[in-house]
Length: 575
View 1 (cartoon, one colour):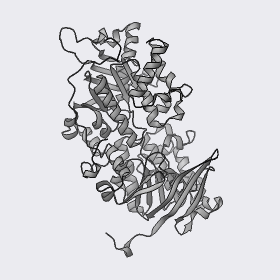
View 2 (spheres, helix red, strand yellow):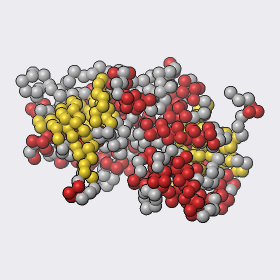
View 3 (cartoon, rainbow, N blue to C red):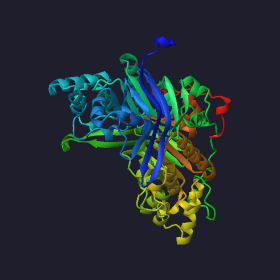
View 4 (cartoon, rainbow, N blue to C red):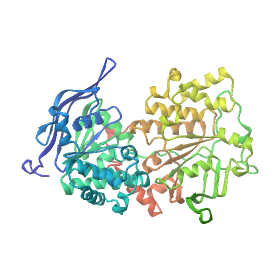
C-alpha cells in the first residue's frame, strides 16, 4: 500500500452534492449529500439499481443534467476547478477533453449514417484542431489502441457492420479522442456477452494502469465492480450507504442493501441445489380438466420428453447472385431433449444459434433438416389445427418487457389476449383468470387497468410471464428474460420462474448468454457455440467439470468469481 505521501493526486472530489428534479410541481431528490473521491489512475465503481442516483451523479459531473434538474448544494472539484460554477461555454472546454464519457448503448450512441472512423475523429477535430487527414490517422490509431482488429478497415465501416463489442470499443476510442484525465463509463458492458464484457473491462483497466487515466464505472452489478474497481461506492435512494475497497464491501458488507445486492448478483450468489424433477405431469389450473394430449408416451407407461430435437439444422441464404447462392448455417446438427417439468438452460454468446433453435422449437421457424417433436408429434407434419394447439402449449417470454407489451393496452387486456385468441372461457371467467394470474406472478390484481408505462421493469416482466401462462402452456421459452433488469429484480424473477415450474410442472427452456444466471435456474445446461451444441449435461457437471474449452472460457469470464462463496453469515439468507 502506498503511504499518504505516495498517494496519487485527487482528480475528482465530490463534496455534499445534492441534486433535485422538478416536474409538475413535484420535487424528487435524486442525489442527497454525496461525497466521493477519485484519484489519478484509480478505478471507482458506483453501484446501485435503477433510481439510486448513480447516473444523475455522473451527469452532474459531466455538466449534462437536464433542465428539470438543479444542483441545490455541494461542490464538484475536478482538476483544480469547481464544475458547478462553470458556464456552459467554459464547461465545453472540459467536457470531451479532460472529461470523457462512454455511454451504455453503442447502437443508440453511434450515428448509423456516419462511418466509425469519422465519429472517432470528430472529437479530435473539435478539441485538438488538426487537418481532417491527420484526425483520420489519429482515429485509426485510437481504434488500434482499444484493441479493434483491422482498425483501418473498421474505421471505414458503419456501426451496423460491427459487432456489439466492436461498437463499444469504438465508443471508448471516441471518449479517448480528447485525451481525458477522467473517463466516466455508464453501464459500458450491460448489453455484451460475458466474454466480450471481460475484454472491454480489461481494456478499461489497462488504460487506467498504463495511461494514468481515472475511471468512474457506473454499474448495477457488484460482481463487475468487485473484479475491476479499487473502490466501490454503493448508492441507494441518492445516498452512499457503503464505501470502501472491494475486499471490505464484498466480504464484510455493513449495510443491508449491500447484502441484498450480494445475494442477488448471479456471479456472487451460491447456486441453487434443487433435485432434478422426475418428470411430473403438468398440473392444470384450478377448475379445469386435464388435457387428453398430456398422456404418457405411447407404449411406455411413463411420460417421455416433452420436446425432442434430433439432428436439427437451420441455414439462411446470404446475399449473392441466384446462381451463386451461399448459405449461413445458424444451427448445425443439434440434438437435445427438454423433459417434463425440467429447466434446460441454453447458453451461448450472440450469434451462437440459441434463439434460432428456440424459434424452431416453438414452430415459428422451420428447420432446414432434422426433426423436432413436441409431445411425440413431429412439428413438420402438423396441420393448421395442430399448429394452433402447439401455439397454446408453448409460450415465449421475451427479453425486453417494455418492447413486447402493447403500450396502448391495459394490463388486463394484455394478459387476456391469449385467452381471446385461443377462445378460452367467457368474459367473466377471463376476468377472473386474469386477476388470478396477476396474483400468481406476485402482482396486485388492482393493477389490471394500468398500462405498461405505469409499471416498473420488474412489474412489466411479471405481466409478460402472466400473459405467457394464460393458456396453461406445457413449455415456457424464456429468451434472456432478466438481462434488462437490476440484479435484485433479476433474482425475484428467477425465483418466480422456478417457483412456477415447481408449482405447475411447466417445462422451461431458459436462454441466456450469462452462465451465472443459468446456474441459478437450470437442472441441465447446454452450451452452444457457432451453431453447434458443444456441451450438454447436469448443471453441476457443466459448472464444476466442464469438458469443452469454450465452456471453460465462458466460466472464466463470469464476473465476481474471486468473491463467490465467501459470503459472511450476515449475508446469508433467503433471496
